[in-house]
Image 1 (tube, rainbow, N blue to C red):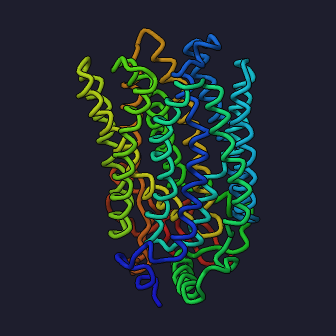
Image 2 (cartoon, helix red, strand yellow):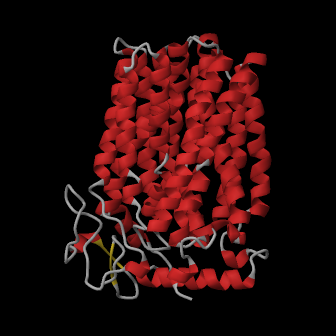
Length: 473
């Protein structure tokens, strides 16, 4: 069976036992990670900042310290998952971050909270890139946009119910109990992950033999076309991490994450300021943008998988999100209009996630692609730190919400522009007959170059020269 027939659009993603078994597990895992990462913003708006006498700058620093830890463990953790066991790494990290999440509820010192948030980021750091890498072993290229979207869908769905449930929980108890009750499920789920996650299709007894053969045929064809490596070396990882398209996307994701996490962490406070509502109503209002975002993610990932195009499923959304952020502030005291534009901004910034990470994982051959995802995501962590800290700090300065919206809109627009500098690999059935260059085309990203420079190629052990764009030489 050819790659095209094995994964043709319209064949039914959920008809696969792989999707029915793995996607709920991936969704719950990332949902819990996002819960324990993001409930700090609700706690802060729900009385923690007042109880602990936190200034705007210190409050922002505590929230943002998570992302410094998140940055440090991305690449080494993902390499461990890729070369040894993603199953063990994800399970252990889930248990430990649950314990650290609970610990936030019993601390009162800002210094202790910074240390715990930093450690929480470290243990969660490798989970997303490891899961993206793992799904790449279970789904073909024409399925990965949807698979990655269903994984990352845990983000907006979690924030949606988190905002409403956590706001209610604080209103009937306090922020300390919220941290404790929302951390315990991760501990339990981490233990279950050891049984639910398998590192490779060959390890899964529940996978039908026919489906297994079909998947192996499809993945083998993709790896042959992409020049996939086996028995990866340090040098091969180094080539991937230095490749120009990967570095450009790392910078792009920095700016995207700046705007995104400035939006996520401070949306409750911005909504509360604009609406004048209490914490319970603020939680409900904050949940609305994420409901629309979830729908946009599903539709956009389906378009990307059916068309085989990734870049067009990313940059227009980000550009529109930047415009909506700017217009939201321009709406001024007209809260209904400003809030409607915030909904548009949120769905536009979320919609590209699935196709985006499918693109990143396709930049490098199987066997070392996890490192590319980890590098991009680690720079996203730095952008998240900058967005969480600086947006919070600016809101407390004389610039106020105007400066915060300007920061978020500018960075989101920059991320859209950088996407135009990256060329996406072609799917195997659409591969050109002539040699093409790397996924780089100057400022426009349009057009193919007839040759690639040596610096853009990854040498493979089988003697085949391979561009980062996915074409063998």
